Length: 446
Image: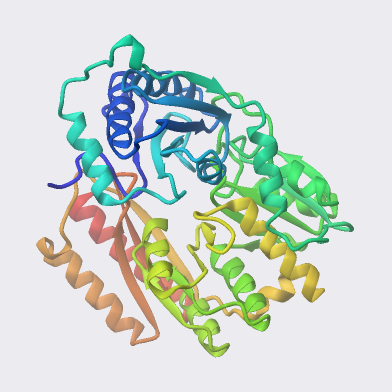
């Protein structure tokens, strides 16, 4: 049985269009409640948080009703970063944690993500079990077995203390001036306080969510204003999160972007010199330059499928503690169970402080290969082998790269897109080839 609703990162789509509707989410809450109830002999508890989208109110109420109907107690966290929900799921000893968020997508999208009681994303088996209950009639428990709901008053403070605690005792950020861009999302009331309480001077950006401005001209997907702010304020750096706080990107003091691959390299190199880096898991999209730079240091590298769940699987298999994606989704498994933008940012700042060098110096150890990606919106899912013209275009591009680069076509797991990526030593050739391949993909399936 294949998954009908769950994608690579929960269930996501446009609000009001199936399956992101109030009635479906109500039943999803009930279905999840039934599955997790079957796994627990004691108290049945699920915690739930959300980002700052206006639709979060509706889906929070719908999920809450479904869970209570299934006989499950609910602890409501309010606006909370995705990694904060993973952390609190463990500390509350809950059966599961639910995140209402569409991450870096616009406000009119939303989604539902789950964590198990261990703080990790759900296995395929549990997702399939939830989907099987979605095919059944919703049956409400009798009144004496209904769940109850409570709001957690100190959730924000708990998570802030956890983030600060991921640094060694005595660490501080005194003397640093940081512009913090919270994407008008779930970190708006958390990230600035973390850095400020550690001693940094903080300039806040995009910390006034109104339900509609999440990720709008701000955050890790739109960092132009952050780059300007770093230069205009004379700051040491800028830090940008996405809407749900599981991604982070930096801007150095010269206004240059530092992406997830470069941040991962900085953390890995610092840990390597401390004897704490056994290997790094990246993805098919990770820059080839990072792979070469890590190998020069003697650090093993492995490419997993795109998606944090696959990176984490690769890390677990190899017993590595560091992995991530170029988008800024960085996992430090010795500190937490999932990608955490604030925790990853603190690891970068720790490297800077302990080495005593600015970020633009630390990232010089990695030579980035020119990489260009074009998103092609498609009408339907497709199998590359069924389109000879696209296959021929890919082969021709690879031939021109002559072993000094690569071509990758990857369907998005959350949007109706195919990501066409070309990477190589020659920037002009990369730009030319990606446009040619994308044009063929557009003509065939766009």
